[in-house]
Length: 150
Image (cartoon, rainbow, N blue to C red):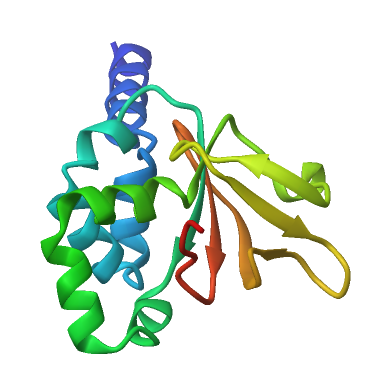
């Protein structure tokens, strides 16, 4: 009986510790409030909670703060443009830091981003400041600026 109780308790603990998707992982980190707001405004929450896998180059709140408030407010109000900007930060597949190579990479938005590896990794000039934040449907790499499609 005691063994059964231990096994049941362990099973309950394992069920309570579920992996988080990209959105939940970003929200839990606490430094992506503007990104979460933007994803909600663009209607992309369900997409990034989906199966994936996705690689997200996630701008922090400080990165969004570099955009003048009037410009950011206008972007948040323009769903089509906001969707294009946000999906420009997403690459299909799960690319860990050790697998990053310099060159052009197609985004979910359809355009290509330029990844450089000399002197640290950058994506369209935005510096990658933290890598390999694992989620159950992909990975997040933190960037210091919002990148915009050409």
